[in-house]
Each structure stands twice: as C-alpha cells, then as structure tokens.
Length: 169
Image (cartoon, rainbow, N blue to C red; front, side, top):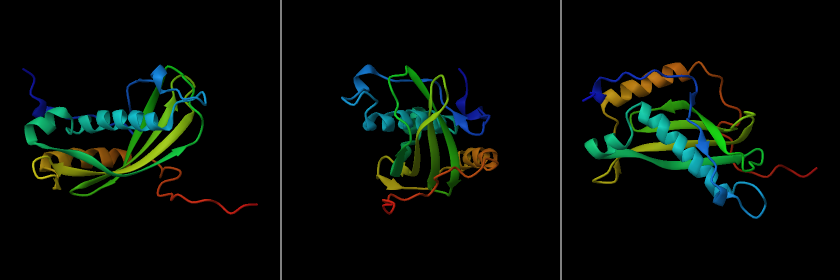
C-alpha cells in the first residue's frame, strides 16, 4: 500500500482545482447560478487544495482534526450562467500555527474570465474538543512550502476589502 506520509506535494502558484461541475438545479429564477452555490464551488476547491497539504478526509479520520472556515467574504463579479464547468484558483495569502488565509477566484470553464472571488480564514480544529489547536509540524512544513511558492504571486485585487456602499454620484 502507498504511504501517504512519504508524499511530498508539488505546489503550483496558484493552485488550480479540477473542473467543478455546475448542477442544473443550482440555477435560480434570474437565469444564473444562485449565490449559495458559489460557496459550494469555493468549498470544493478549498478541499482539493487542503488535501494537497495533507488536510483531507484521511487526516480528519486519522488525526481527529480538520479545518473550519471562520470568516468568508465573497464578491460576485460577473453572472455565471449554466456553463457546465468552472475552475477555481486558490492562493495561500498567509498563515500562522493555527490559521490559514486564502484567496480564491472562480473562473469560467472555457473562457477563463473571473466570475467571483472569495477570501477566507480557516482554523485548525480538534474534532473531539471543537477547539482551535496548532497544526502538527509536518502540516506546517507543507503549508510553509505552499506559502513559499504562493508568496511570489501578486497581492490579489480586492484582498482585505470590506463590505460597504460607495457614495452616490
């Protein structure tokens, strides 16, 4: 059997998800993907990226720990019609011993334009106590490896943006 602990991931900047399928039932009465399902797509892409550093379902089962989203901010930039598939990019912006700061962008499946972006902070949580705990050393090493590669990327447009209404003209 393959030893997952010996796996050394190769990080790309940014991480690009597999194609993510748009489900027909996600379409709303406005003729585009309902806002709730953008979160589903971002969540699936985050799961893929986190599995690369060892924080997937096997980790949760074996270590009884996982990551929980503490805060998120989604910006909808362009309507997403039923296009079949999209891809998400994931950039690790920052981290510490217990937290990850990620920035994601959702790209049209064939044309590549950006439909939405999502900024989030995730916490490393002990599943038994439901408390935030430090990442194990081997996970921190992988996170540091991802950050080293992603650190060469430009700061994402809109990073740290707050929700507000601009003054009227």
